[in-house]
Image (cartoon, rainbow, N blue to C red; front, side, top):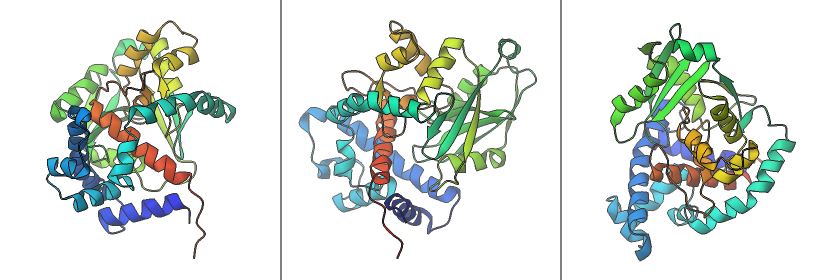
Length: 313
C-alpha cells in the first residue's frame, strides 16, 4: 500500500465510514465552507499573522477540532497546509515550473493532459457548431458536492461541456453562465446522469486508464491556452507569461489571462494552476480563496504521492 493510498483511505473513512459515493463529498463540501472562511480571514489579516487558535475561532472551532478538520479535508495539519499558501511557496513552484513542463512534454502529454491518474482529452467545437449555438445539442446537468464546494456539472454525448463551482451568485448564476455558452441547446437537470462523472472526478481512488472527454467552444487562441493548461501537472503552478511562451505568443499575456478567465471546465482544465510571476496567487472566477484552497489541497496530495511506498502488512 502506498503512502498516498493510505492517506486517501483514512480520509475516506473519516468522511463516510469507508463507503464510496456522494456522502463523502457532501462532508467534504461542508468542511470546505469552513476552510474557505479561514482562508478569507487570513487574506484579510495577513499582516497581523494571526495564531492558529485565532483562525480556528473565526470558524467557530476549537484549535483541536480545527486540526481535525484540516486532516480530514486535506490529509495534513492546518499549519502545514497554510505553508502552501505563502508567496514563498508560490515562487518556488514558479521556479520549478520550467523543469516540470519540460518533463510533461517528454512524457508525451502534448496532445492530452493528465490530472492525477486521469487522461483528459479536449475536443473543440467546430465553427459551424459554435454558430449553431448548440441547436441540436442535448445537455444534462446536475449539482454535486465536491471537496471545493458545490459544483455544477454539464455533459453532452461528446463529453463534459462545463464545470462551475457554485459561488456568490448561487446555483442560478452558475447555470446561467453555462447556458450562455450554448443558448440554443436543450438543457435537462438530471443529476443521476451526471453523478457518475462527478464521483469519478473527485474520487478517492481511480482506476488505471480512467479518462475524461471535454467538449468546449472557443476561439483557436482560447483552445490553445486551455490545451496548454492541461499540461500543467498537479502540485505545480506556472505564470501567465509562461503559458504565453508555451503557445508561441510571448507578447500576448493579457490575451492569455482573458482566455484563462473564460475556462469553461473548472478543475479539469486547471486554470487555478496559473499564478502571477511575483508569486501572488491572483484572481479566480470562482473566488481567490477557492483558488488557494485547491492549490493547497493539490500540493498536499502531491507531497503525499512523493512519499516512500509503504509495503502492505
